[in-house]
Length: 276
Length: 276
Image (tube, rainbow over all chains, first blue to last red; front, side, top):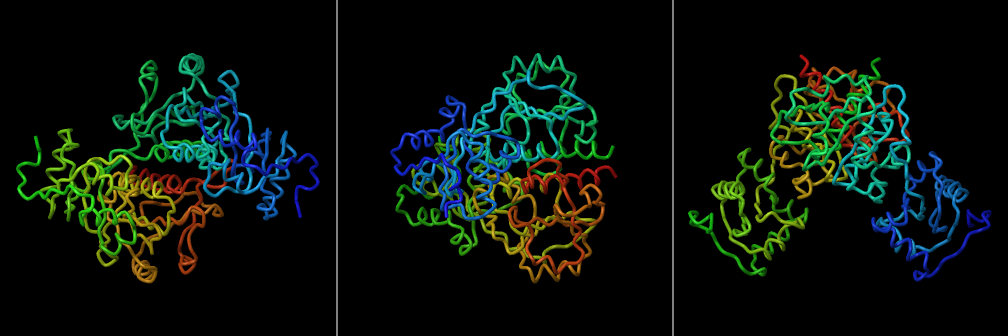
């Protein structure tokens, strides 16, 4: 009955007082995740992309009787082969440990990415997304999905306010945190990196008269995205060469949703690059 | 001190047991809003757009001492002139009555729009959005903002599952529910309306080989949007002439956020129409 029966080293946990359970529950807090340099994967869609991208797991905890679907069982089996420790748990423990209201039946723990700007090697004419601050997890998740779709080469998160390892972002990105490489950079390092590399930088601004479709996206391009409420920070004043573009609006509302505006610009880039 | 002092007919309510307070609190429920055919406006951004679009109010309840900013006072004064009844309330009553965690300081109640397909008069080459079902309020709100921006002529909500008067939609639309005309239609009426009117219908489908930018958006066009999880319902099988288009994706994630995908298509329409 137990689809994991061939995997020998499964430890069973049945008490919510177990120290692992307490540890997992604490990982729902951003500060603790940062301290431990790990994060949680709770959904199958995300697990699938994590596996596709060769992510390794530190721990995998499974409510075995809840995983009935064969595809899901196969994903869990594959994850088990890539996990240092495997635990069999019950529903009660799972709901104490996960962030979601309706957990999928498992919990995987993996290491945070610690890539930095030195890990980036530019080739060809890359398409880069630089995210300074996006307030809502759903918006960053949506933008990560678009980045995956249009082939963004990598994402640079500048001094991130938003914790990309927030379970709501992992979920709403549908796992694109695993498929699109990203690095976290402080302003100073990014400054010298940008000055060294020849990449046209574009940012949306309602004050600009240049329309976003007038940009030549066949050049190496970085799109800068700031806060929906505050826009880009004064950090960018240092850069004389940012091209401001407008996503034209003919209605009464004064701004678009930040993931929508950024995605519209990225797809125009994709359209131009596809049309040769 | 009271910026509403010149308005004579203000009734003061100080008890949370008052029947108006109980009535407002009940309006947080979709069923009760539908029964009463009214809804709530809770934020200044939305109030501003409501005023710009000549919305009248049934009731306006204000925590007078909380409205300090002059622009906000002016908006409330203007709303008061357009409201049948005006109430002065305290913070406690407001927080009992509003949906938001951090209420702005007022609550306005207005009638639900009861326009139907017969109220639509097509002229020129309209751009129409037909929404069947969007699960998340934030996604519908974002799409309404885009519709306002690209000049969608009107939105048709088909047998809506989503209550457009949900306070989270009013809020995330930033008031575009007031600036973009919409009608609610049942499937049968829409069916005959669509067969009578010559409008090209397009819908996103990952299975299509036609790219969205290959569509001629200068024609009268209706974009159909279905559920992010389920797609369009079988209702549309009746229509032989729906053109399916794909928003190409070259990554690993299998779909875009629904408001992002729809906005990308709408902006391509806007780009084509702007370029003459």
